[in-house]
Image: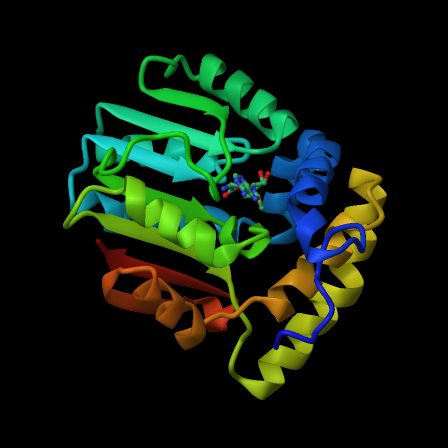
Length: 244
Ligand SMILES: C[S@@+](CC[C@H](N)C(=O)[O-])C[C@H]1O[C@@H](n2cnc3c(N)ncnc32)[C@H](O)[C@@H]1O
């Protein structure tokens, strides 16, 4: 609700969220990939594969991976054999890590990572055949603006696929999950990343995120049609598919 306190990485106001998010991801960029796979026990890779499978149905030539971070989804999307994948992010630290990976894989001709804000995307209307976002929308300062910008740069009849954490629905599983998420994960996250807030912000932002049908409605309000939600791994994550 509108009177609830903003959930931001370092406790600032909602209008400072973008700056804080960029700075937090700059701080943890060096350990991000390791912690991601370690703390999720590798499940994050399976979730990204599911996104790739959905995108593959559309055989897009050009893909925009928003909030690309270190480029894991952009790299996984190579399986769909597009002509070009563009990844944008507001964290220079994350992009730097991603560029090293892309260079090592020798796929610079296919994937281009660049600075870009999802709430003010620097591309023309109707530019891409598909858009993906993995674990990004929860971090947007202005979610509605981010969704309408993705709608704008997507070509008509093309898909948006969003992967994001959600809250498990089963009561028993939810207790175990949030215990791990609010106690174990921040402890290990802080120990390794040295950022005391990043892995406390993570469960806080998941709790605050309007997941499931609320997010699906936001997609419809932004103009998307045929919105579909698929819950993954007891509802820890959800894939949202939508068409412009
Ligand atoms: C949890 S990481 C996810 C990275 C990657 N998609 C993955 O699956 O590992 C979230 C990323 O969203 C980026 N981000 C947050 N707000 C953004 C915005 N407004 N525009 C672009 N990127 C943003 C952050 O900088 C960060 O790299």
